[in-house]
Image 1 (cartoon, each protein chain N blue to C red):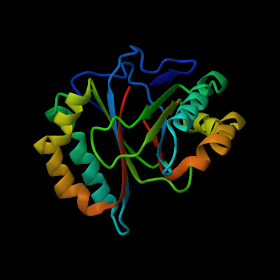
Image 2: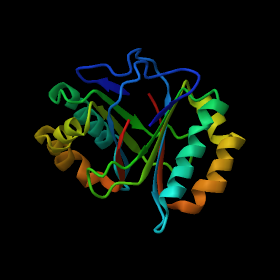
Image 3: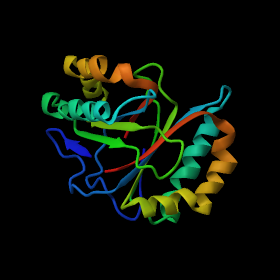
Length: 112
Length: 112
């Protein structure tokens, strides 16, 4: 479901399928480790053509209590999301870089 | 940070500021209550012109362990996000409809 405000940011009104994952890193996680997560993830759109749009973000520090890091990935449909989810390059980033740093993780997938 | 895949979904490459909130509802939350949350939130873009794009989603049931409901709201900048965060119409939905149903909540704000 997508509701537009005064401006239609997405422009084309396309449907799709969205994956959102939020992470809170374990205490002691370094800036260097966080940069490695972002760097490794940022290579995935070049390797997994099913990714339509890929947005990574670090908490801007505006509202207290938030998670540390976000991934918002859009796909044409759930089949393309599943290709991403199970892709060996994605699993490698998860296993090698992300999982050891996870304090908490919250995720959802929904139809756009 | 936004990384494009083979297609640039966002089209205009605009910068901005994103708020993401994921919710896991308390046990016993009814479909009717969830529909009320979505209905009340979906009126906010018409009342808060600072909302650039507003996306609401219910877990598609593809990957186990996910949260129940997502809000992804995009703004021109953090000042516009703060207008939304503190807007009385938004606070009313939170206080009257959402807060009594929250089992878990995960949120982040980040620069696009």
